[in-house]
Image (cartoon, rainbow, N blue to C red; front, side, top):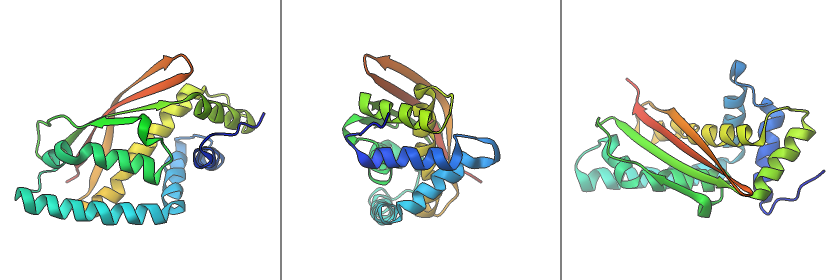
Length: 192
């Protein structure tokens, strides 16, 4: 059963990641698949990097500080919404993000939500069947979203010129009729 998604870019992304990784965390296969996606989307990554680097410099000059926590409070939602919709094929209109006040200057709190629609879930199901994989669509949808969020770490490290890493603290899944909402909670930290 071949599903034709409304977003062919999303379908191609799912198939490339599944083919390369089989969603295996062992040996870092899923992370390697996402690194390959960044290389595959290098033109979008370069545009993103250039724009975010300019935004970071302007923000630092305007605020006279370089606290990661404040930067994310001010601009974090934009940073993630554009990363997930420009570099990765998540639909901008079904993404939302907020970055609440952090207890530390070097840490950013993240809350990012994506609602997979019926078509995207069918694409995931079709790819699972074609790759002879037994995972549930919900589980795969969760993994793909988490890894797309975490994959920003290296790019953002280059923008701020400090090692930066995203950590997941919790993920809630909410099934609603024919859609699936992934509610991600995490933190980003400057790594010393």
